[in-house]
Image (tube, rainbow, N blue to C red):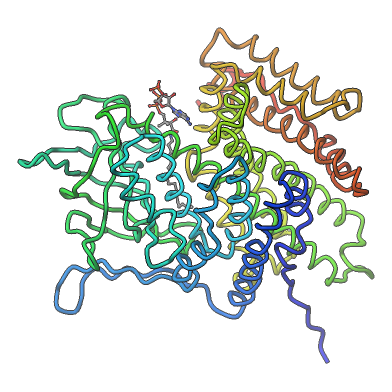
Amino acid sequence: MAFLQDAPQLAHPWHADRLLRSLIERALPTQRHEALIADLAGLGDYAQMAWQRASQSTRRKPVLTQWDAWGKRVDRIELTTAWQEGPHIATQYAVLASGHADGEFARLEEFARVYLYHVASEFYTCPLAMTDGAATALKSSGNQALIDRALPHFLSRDASGFWLSGQWMTENAGGSDVGNSETIARQDSNGQWRLHGRKWFSSAVVGEAALALARPEGMGDGTAALALFYVETMDGEHRKPGLIIDRLKDKLGTHELPTAEIHLDGLPAWPLGELSHGVRQVAPMLNVTRTWNAVCAVASMARAISLARDYANRRHAFGRPLIEQPLHAQTLADMQAEFQAAFALTFEVAHLLGRVEHGAAAPHEVVLLRLLTPLAKLWTGKLAIRICSEALECFGGAGYIEDTGLPQLLRDAQVYAIWEGTTNVLSLDSLRALAGDSFGALRRSIVHWLNDDRHTHAACTITQTIDAAAHWLDQHAASRDRLEAGSRGLAFTLARCAAAALLARQGAWSSHQGDPRPAAALRRFISHGLDRLVTPDADSTALLLD
Ligand code: MFK
């Protein structure tokens, strides 16, 4: 009988995930820990089932039907099975509701669910992120009428009453530079605001509501003259006539996600607050969706590594299983160490978000969250691409074959560095955050996370690198151009230092439990280096671009 290679099997995403399990054991009080576990086990079951189901079927895309047979405009979107299941899974397991429950652990508990659900959801988590962000922005607006109207739907635990919300920000002219947005808000004769314009990336077009940036007519140009509006998209069963779906995007990845270009032609809208400073008002939404981005990125890394490790045990080459080949093992361990560091930073952001929202955080932690959010987003976005690419290579040619289900991991991962702001936009946002005292807050927190271990090799490396980053900032503070040119290197350096200190905290805790693996992850991560600072050189940049 000819040789046939076993396909990789997906280990149970909850039961076999020692990282998530030990995070929950360390960070959550026991009574909350026990309440959460049934949901995590259920989401792990769903994820395992979804992987098996996907391996037995051809990958599908949503289909937009714009006209019915009799010429009526219908803009109907047929969704994939996982997307049809989305409202049921999200509400049954309280994915969003848990994040808005009481207590400083709410966000940690929410993002543990997101982490397990994300890959299986086929990026249904994208509109869930938007809905979570919309709920957060509505709450911080204090607009009680809109809160009473929308939040019971956004946070519903019953699929029949659940609403998704979009975030309608990006436009043709106003991409990263949202201040160039052209959508106009105009009041009709009854005083009702109505939106007119074109939104270029709407990933929750099947949703029932959205938050949209628009320029109240006559308010002038720029970011400050934008306002933030709440809209609803449906009249009963039918989409409102003021919302027209132009087409679905043909994307590199995230194929199941129906991302649309839309026109707004008089869609009724309600301002969240003042009729200006819409970006300031949407910022709480951006910071929540960027946290989702980071959690989804580490979820993709977890999936890629889990499959690659399983395969390394099944596949034999040159006389032994791949896992016993020194270079293959070294490669997998390198991936694992980077992933564990990214996981530690991302879930610290999740926990911190809950602490800040529930008034449990110290003042320095509030500014720390403002800095760590873009750092986690930008670093995990890039790392996910690298790890998924490396994971595909671990399968040799099979990693390049579409119906193994592996190439989609890499294609989908590319979105994390773009979704909710590119790496460069987020690097510049971290400079915005550093304008406050967030650097001091980071330094103080690192000392706290390192606890008494200040003289270990890891602690010395972290401290020296943070000192080097402080020196770099002093050196370049006088030149905005130099600061901006080097901001990516600075952001990666700060992200790696924070992650290393968090790994050290987890390592110390796990060592007490008799588990030496997190400490090994720290040593390996430190060996990859923390310092990614660059010396901006405008002359050579100009020559290289000439
Ligand atoms: C899942 C798959 C999806 C499928 C494909 C998706 C592909 C991608 C589709 C997308 O388009 S996703 C959306 C991506 N777009 C963005 O994330 C926006 C990127 N741009 C930025 O983030 C800019 O930094 C931003 C528009 C927010 C700011 O631009 P400006 O014009 O330079 O604004 P400015 O004046 O610096 O900030 C305005 C206010 O907001 C300031 O407050 P004040 O008015 O009080 O001074 C800022 O401090 C505040 N602000 C900005 N960013 C903030 C923030 N506050 C808190 N947190 C932040 N992150």
